[in-house]
Image (cartoon, rainbow, N blue to C red):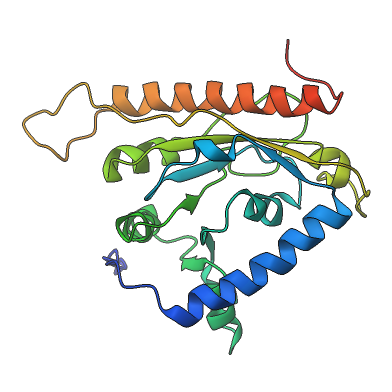
Length: 236
């Protein structure tokens, strides 16, 4: 019988001052590029909750991760493949910029444990619930991970529409276009459990399904608003 790697239990730790300073410096540079090159604007940033939450943007472009950094000055946390964190010196830089490693090909529980630790630390977590860069105006096949985490950690999910990002640098483009981008923050979605099955930790399949459907609808609304305000196509 093959040995299975046991899931790792991650715990929250205090954020180091140098990490916040490093992130603030990098975020300032990224936001400057977003403003000057992509002429980015943001609507609804006041809807972002205090404390931990899961930010769930639509995913249409190579630019989505740096674009999202313009939403808030707070440090946003992102998952990344563990291999790049093993490069000498690079792992420390990525960590300072909000990244944290997950082990691809190992149990998803490791990634979930790491995400819960981030949220337990009071920080916002960025997840792209479509799982990959898609194309077109319709949000389909939203994965259940964000809903599960929201229920597990009891934190809100915030849908985000990114208008113009696919036009700027979609998945089929080799080079970017310098065009305007608009981010629209949707209404936060607060999780609720319909059944506890005798345990406060129990998360039912129906709870996950319901919250995932609400999330997909919220992302679609924010995405439509962002696209329409830029004069681009949206789902009717």
